[in-house]
Length: 67
Image (cartoon, rainbow, N blue to C red):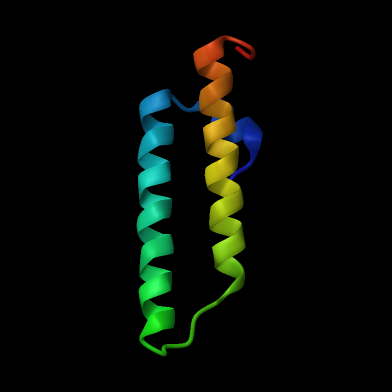
């Protein structure tokens, strides 16, 4: 799980890379679920929440709200 303080220390490009990695993981989990494999379903919510956190930090950096 990513903490907001840790996310604010990263650069915008690092945050975008994190989002891409999380989306790949989310996709892989969906494919595993569709194939009938056992999946830790709690990860779906964790991934969505983390992506939302990262997007919020990116918006803060872009708009200049937080520095």
